[in-house]
Length: 222
Image (tube, rainbow, N blue to C red):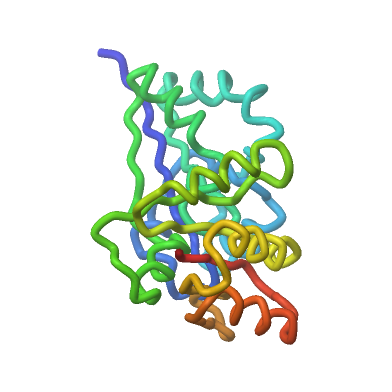
């Protein structure tokens, strides 16, 4: 009988290390090796939980060139875990390609539940949650305007990720689409010491962050 390994998709904390689950630690200790988005970022995290499993680099720039080697290892019976720098892999991080390849090759995939930034941001926004659309990061240049128009036409609660250095520009773009009076919720540094949730109009948020330098990773809920 053919014995195949399994791909484990393992979320890691987005801030507070106590958000690491017992099950995640157990899986990472037991697999044959771990695919990490950035080994320099992941190694201190794993050391904190006494995980000595071998790390291999897996990111957007090398996934196409190494994917077949990984699939072959899985077909040969190896168990492999995939982690990203923070949160759940494949959510605005590498992961889709390897999961799809595993499915195509009938290799089992198991995704552990765990940390991801948009869920607490949604819950704390106070906005309707029976329908929502996750847009991730907006394109920097190519495709940005079409994605903004898609946002404008979406009738449901909308969720965006944004980095601090593009944050104010994105707020200005949202103002051009929705108007300055549109109510939004902004969450930053989720699960960290300076976690913050702000709610108000786009104009109020622009003014606030013109006076307070944007820091940390942001989740915008519209």
